Image (cartoon, rainbow, N blue to C red; front, side):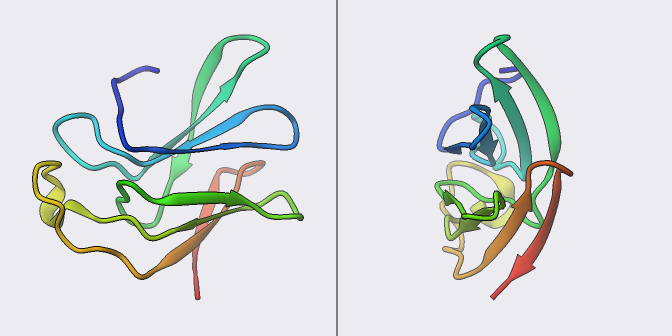
Length: 103
């Protein structure tokens, strides 16, 4: 990965790539996402979630989108402070790298 990251959510997509969402880089919680391609060993950025999420869950849906739920926001970004636990969710379209809040 371009930067060290922990507590991210990882989801294997239908095409074999892995979507890596959020987590923290030992300094700040992240909203960034990346796609890992195991056939080439490459990682590329693919957009940002609507909010920072650390320890969230991510599940691929039948239509190919990924549902990202919960986690915590670090209350200001500092990874040492769990901050507010989130009762929110968002959808990621990995083909376009776009994210949208959802109920």
